[in-house]
Amino acid sequence: MTPLILVGGGGHCRSCIDVIESTQSYEIVGIVEQIGTEGSPVLGYPIIGTDVALDDLVRNCSVALITVGQIKTPELRRSLFQLVQGHGGTFPVVASPHAYVSGRAKVGAGTIVMHGATINVGARVGLNCIVNSHALVEHDVNIGSHTHISTGARVNGGVSIGEGTFLGSGAVVNQGITIGNNCIIMSGAVIRSDVPAGTKVTGEWR
Image (tube, rainbow, N blue to C red; front, side, top):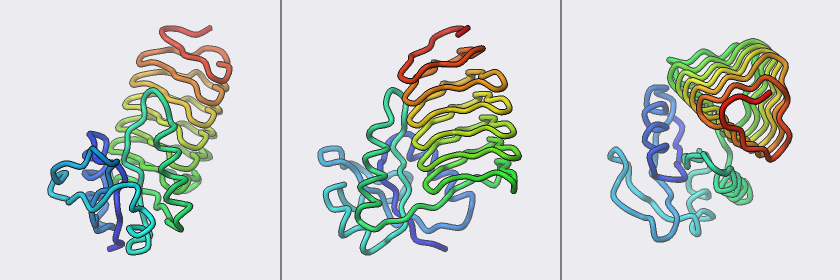
């Protein structure tokens, strides 16, 4: 099994651990936390250091996964990804055996595909994304890096979603729509027309 360090030890980390364990492909060495937030082991895995020690940690274990969650902003996940990269670290693609990822889809390094998610033929998912439990990414969708597709979201065919965007639980994006970079699409929203970069959407967007 490949040794793996996790960067971020909150609630999302716990869900990631469950997915990682289910793959039986990785040995979790431990968890890296921010200074001042170091606490108890997470599901039995130790805290092995803080992000200021990432240089040494990555030297000893070069494969990492960012396990900080993303709701309001992608900046922490993005900065940690870049920090690990800067120290020479690499990132796997982690996909639950209970998810479906088409062999004709492309998924970027550092992305986790969680239990029950579907990524269909021709879809492209960028670096360091979260495709959360039971999310649907349909055919020919393009998702930018550092984006979170939340639980139960439905992204229909031919949609393009920009970098750093958050798509909330149960949100639905109609076929062929473009959503710009750094948008926040709240839970349950229905997207029926293009959304400009930096927009926050609640309810229905026409």
